[in-house]
Length: 327
Figure 1 (cartoon, one colour):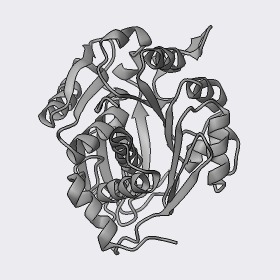
Figure 2: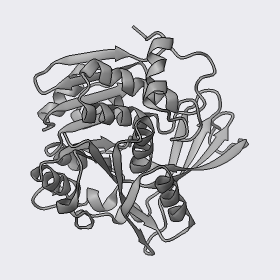
Figure 3: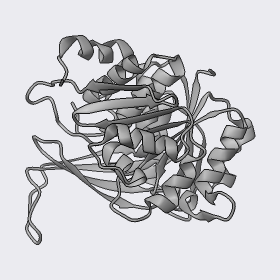
């Protein structure tokens, strides 16, 4: 496989706000700290993967506003060695941003998101003929208005783009945002028909397939039934699982992390995704893939933002030897 990767979709600036507890409706709670950081599928997965192995060529594709947040996001990505030539700036909408309310001690977080410039992203913005990558990762379905829009032939604009990328001989991968809505069947399922790899959490898998969230094998089977071609990976706090098109199923328990390890969980799913995508680029076996992915997610938990916990491949994999795993 061409060991280059392109990340297309959300580029968001996170305002991570730490709070001692989640208030009851109408009540006040103090904010102990505020930190600005890059966020969104493109930023998180690109930075995490590039940090694992700086030798991998990583490209970001998306849209930001012609504003301070947009400048901040692009500068940060470029400073980490990520190609941002395909990130366009627009004055039509501000850069998307999210208020990430994070509970101290538990890392539990709640998101308040403004659909900004990346909601204008459409397939016509991506020159597929110029893509030079082995994997094209798209995220997030359900959070990109232009890509989630209906398409008479493919169901959605995102599905049209993924079909075109596949036709160019590039492997496609998708991730989904966790959203409580009835839009999954209409928006997610058309894209899965043009997806080689699907990397999501158990809640998203349940909503996409109609299977129970604790039926991880059933979710994997359901995703293949909806059109995924090669591999499904599903992660949740206790375990990660993967299945290939032949039905071979592998399960790895999460690391038993020490008390005080978790400072935040924003971006943990994207970190798991980055570890998975790196493993796919390198041809790792399913068990090693899940072990690396869980270690990458564990590193993410050590900080309140979505990317500054990322470490090198060697340091990340060292967690697998240091800590036991849940059975």
